[in-house]
Image (cartoon, rainbow, N blue to C red; front, side):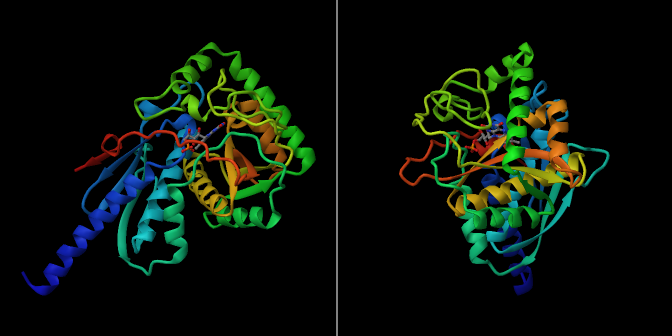
Length: 333
Ligand SMILES: Cc1cc2nc3c(=O)[nH]c(=O)nc-3n(C[C@H](O)[C@H](O)[C@H](O)COP(=O)(O)O)c2cc1C
């Protein structure tokens, strides 16, 4: 073997390792009800992301908008992992119009310098999680919210911070959405399938991360239909800030990009000591999704509502939810 051929062989092995690591790291991504509705196909030079319909929510999310958004978060986690390994990625979103479930294709192009920000983001992926407890009374610093807005905008999406009067509109819409969903027996059955218990199979929302009582919140959090085991102190969430994540249009590629933006926002928020909780009920129900659209006053289409609070350093972190084994979501060929 010539020296050039040997170097190329080493590079191919390094590329394959970086792609496999990216798909593995992407497993930490947040997803609606922790469904993890993604599937990765890995070859030595390409990584392909697919929507796995068998783990999408037929009743709650019939268009798969939140499933695709979740896949977008996994895609962004994969890109972070690749950047931290020192590679530039060539990314094609929705590469095959004949197969809309084929959400993205990634190829490694050339080596790039590893930045401290890339390393930090890679480390933050393992720390990020959803903490549904109400906030302490420390307000959320405007500069930190501005940094989160910048992180979202760097992905091509937008984040609209709600004014206090708009938060009341959001609260009313969230209540309306949760009532509509709660009256639907099929929706209740789907929620029971995905939430509660100890979740031995590595997906779904375990009781350990569901609050043990209803808190006095301005905007109602997800009603899981029962209380869990996560101990909640008596505080309310008066100091929380709320925002709508939005994009220019309301199609599959916009949902995928919104998921990338969610990941960017969440990693940045975590690094700045903020807690982020997605609130998707108002997006799941068409009539309240329209109410969210009117709060955006024409700047874009709503994809997700986010709650931000200042993390209380005195509180022990809420437990992390389980994940599916990597070999169940990564297929090598
Ligand atoms: C698109 C999307 C919608 C979500 N909606 C909600 C929600 O309405 N309420 C909630 O408490 N958590 C919501 N979550 C958080 C998920 O339940 C959470 O990411 C998942 O259980 C995995 O847990 P982790 O974030 O702690 O890793 C949402 C997450 C995503 C990606």
